Image (tube, rainbow, N blue to C red; front, side, top):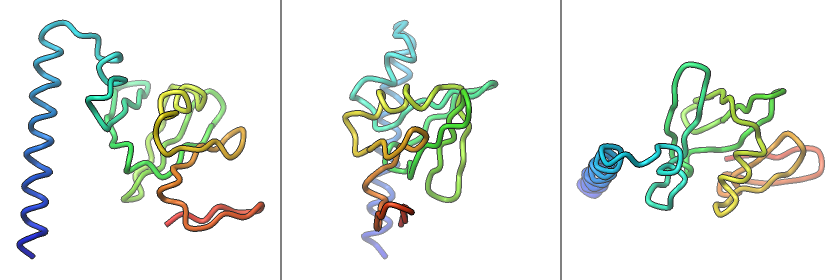
Length: 123
């Protein structure tokens, strides 16, 4: 139990450090899109029509193309709809553990339990 609490406290401190870094860079006039693309963060920006959500890359299970939009399916049954195309996400996640298995699906292989030609089963 103590280890779990210690891990949570460490994670919160790391998030606070990242937020402080983000605020400092934004206040210096750094472009937000370029900042998010940098390797300082393990999060990506998910642009919707009305806002920008930031999601941890490791929490993304898969991305699914829907016409000109992309749906991001993540842990805790969270689904975000982005105005970015799946091609943009593929490019942004190319150096992470993501694999394009079809024209409309980009999966995080860290969440794949099994794969056959008819179905992908995620954890």
